[in-house]
Length: 285
Ligand SMILES: [Fe+2]
Image (cartoon, rainbow, N blue to C red; front, side, top):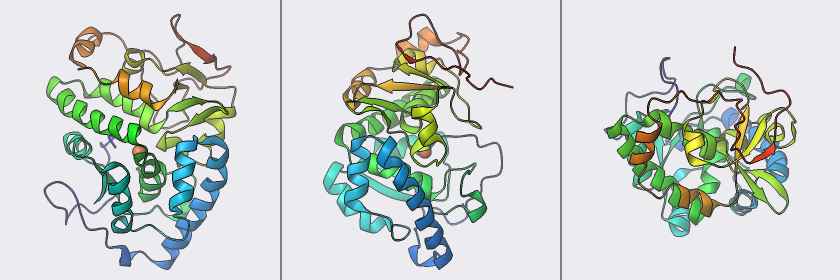
């Protein structure tokens, strides 16, 4: 994922290949790390059953990664068969263009290291639990998998056009923090939520945040919070809506939006399709 990279990154980038990939070296995970994975998994599994979309839950149950930190080389044949994606091991966050290149070629970068026990509830950088538990099940969904590839292709273009900030907001409000309207009510498919113990119930049940219908240009103009729960979540009708909205060339959109002041994360606009207006969105400091 893209992210705030001003601080020193935590992973070991000393042995990576030019495309930033490394070997997972699964045998080097300790028993304590496998035990921590099991605890993280168990806590999240009970929550996603209630708050995640069916597509996520069905894959999670079918694959069952509850017993130990998963081996990427064991998952890859199944992922290849389902959607022709592959997982690649990486030391952590990647430069934007490298990240986009991987996605555009249907390779999903997964961080190899696991958080410390003290970071059970919150971690600053994405670790293997966030990357794998949050992202990988959705890569088994064909429409969503195509969307992620299209995002990568769009990212390469946005990089050349100086529009990454606008495009990154789309990734944030969909792949990381997206909600979906289902016959069983609003659920989530966003990895940032799916890998968080606190934000899973919050995004669905709390009266505090806004829940607003997906609108591509609106999202690309909306700032987001990286250090608190989101003040606004955007709701898609289905994954096809996401793919179709993002199929066109974004170049004219960027031209249209460039130079405009972005909306605050808590803003509700006249044109919004409001599922729920937040009663107390967390205000920016
Ligand atoms: Fe992520």
